[in-house]
Image (cartoon, rainbow over all chains, first blue to last red; front, side, top):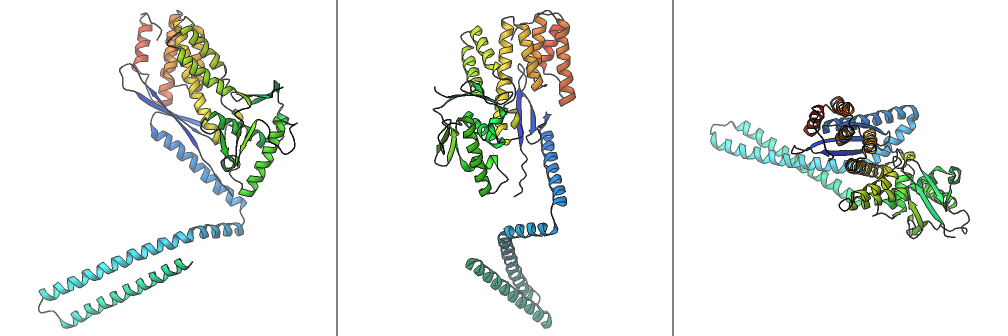
Length: 160
Length: 266
């Protein structure tokens, strides 16, 4: 197991002068290196933290390049994929459900628009009407197919 | 004879077993010493007198898997028991260590004296005395601050678990030293007060109250140039380090001293 820890100790100091508004300043320490920085604005503390986190990330990448063999990298990748896969399926399912919902809405909206259009325009071409109805039918079929696939996926996940 | 432990955690780590200083070699393994320091730190944090083994292992062996961490914990615990009580019966814990199920800590009934505890309690007592008797409070602050020989467990500087206690004790030292420096000015202890301010500024060079007390101390001693120089040091530190100006109170004090006006202790 390779674990990197980056921790910080923050100290805020409130200084008050007679009758004047209090003033804040602070000190931040990176525990693992004992390096410190003083700040009067919190953005400076954030920058200090960001620099140390970046440095740790940079070092860990540098170490991996020199220490890990291609087989080890593959094994690490497979392990990460194993951890990510269950959540990945959830994410895909949620995305598909959203797509289906949008598809249904588009289909309904188009059908409604077509109906209104048909009423409003008396001299519409018979051939165009047939094309539109065909399009709506195909959309409806696609929505039903996708719904079936999602149902199957959900059933498989439940079985697992 | 009852066995006792005296533990120095401030400035450096040392342990006396019934009056005898334990040599470093007695720990055999670095992790045995770390485990002891960890349990001392848990004792100082009143709400965690004993800690579950999982928590100890997670802090001391964070990168090991469960089996290896468990094995290393047992080895370290055994080495620690050997160091504290080499003549104890086989397969028993030292009388200084308490086990409750799978939780471990320092035995609250054992005679264990820790300098950080004395330091904290001393400051509490001194603060209480301040209202009644300044002279007694001064003596109590002196006695308490004498315990602070430096940072908490300096050999565990890069350990997360020691950092919180180190920070807590250092801020207690800074505020305690400032209180004593202020009280000393009321009793004409100018030189001692100035030394305390300097020791605070060694830890935090932006501590403006320390500059002010130092200016007053020098001025009351009749050394106006040094008082004005202390202000200049303050201004320079704040401007260069934090891009800040001294507070109005500090600047007003500077002008009073520069104009030859009388200053009084805070």
